[in-house]
Image (cartoon, rainbow, N blue to C red; front, top):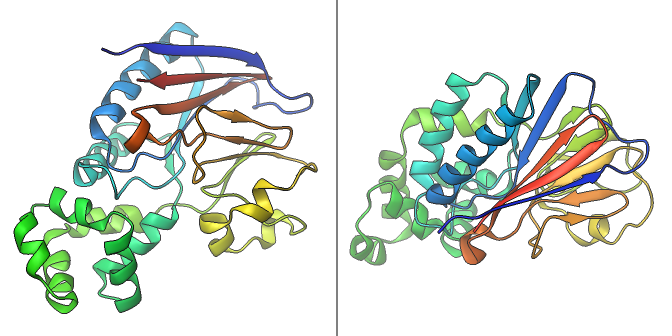
Length: 251
């Protein structure tokens, strides 16, 4: 059964999206294609109900690993990007490792297998029993053959940071004390405590995934949208328009 939790609130004072625009930021998917399909339907209904606007969808990264249908998620979103040009994607740490594994990088291959890569490669058609018998060299060859070039190219084109109005969208967070233009990709994809523990303003409101919370987490300087879809069954989106924000959650 699907229920749509929709909560609206005023955005933090001083933070707004440019007039005439609407943004939906979607949290970490981790191979949950069924939840993605449901959430996209809910977003479409919500978008239509709110009237005309320039609507942008932003996926905050970590499309792949852990859940059962990473290949299906990538293909669905690749097609969505073709149909809706105002769809944008951030490269998460799992995309970084996935691409390295596809290229056969030994360190990436080992990490990929530890952080949910087994489920990902099975979604691309590798038999589970065969996966268990492969060594790393054999696995690298299988992965390279199974992942379509268009999937790897699509993911490799993802962005590290998106700025719209008073909001900055990243996968993991930003390094406190470093100008936005000087942020490093590794921090944008991997950072946790230095960002999460920082309680001062970043000047912009930072919208991120990467770190799981029970529900969309509103702080004075950041909004976390990763609600652990692959374990909780809750995939969340943050809606933004003018100085208002709202959340949409599938369960």
